[in-house]
Image 1 (cartoon, helix red, strand yellow):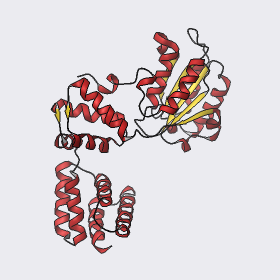
Image 2 (image 1 turned 45 degrees about the vertical axis):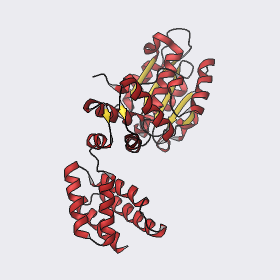
Image 3 (image 1 turned 135 degrees about the vertical axis):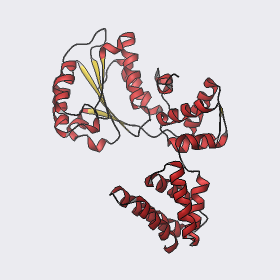
Length: 313
């Protein structure tokens, strides 16, 4: 089965979804063949890598692979990579009519501080023959000297309207029947990440061409919102044993972690029919328990404490 992420990867600027302002500005740079160093920052699956590849293909055409070096900085994150691999590619001239080559560093916020310091000198020394495009989720992890050398583009998560339109496009091409409720669940589970959306859809399509809510929950191994809501409502009413038993059953049946449950509970709390002040207290409880889990506390004990806290709020 063909990998959908590659199959539906953007081939030109028109294919980039949900980033119209950024695409417009970058396209103007490409048309003039005058591009500064670029820093793409934003959530996963929002189109950063796709846009970098489109830039290379628009500039170099069929010879884009010879003029484009892509590295994942989370794998190659040490100073030796900057001094050897990156520097060797950066100091050679491009092939063709474009006066520069492109080095694309994905997940560049994973580079060590020492590697970033070495990178800034390389960017400076070879700027006449090589353009750097850096991609990251958190620009705060990129040192200021590199940020000052780049034009920064901040990508936003893909909005719901664009995600639903994208789902319809794929459903038409793949002959899938996707219910309205399933589309809502796909958006919620992908959270604006098109890469995750494609992975979920491909997995669902391998099971059935008729995709509904149940198929999606089986695929993502998530609990149904109604079940999580029932657990929360039992806890608020003081029916602790019922809520605890149901919670453990759902976690074991679906293989959920404590953090998965906390995130789903937090969403359900927002839709409860209680006053806003009580919602704030429950959200605060979720945040406190989530912090304890991240710090290494036993998730089952902490989740039981959360259920008790819902009643004792």
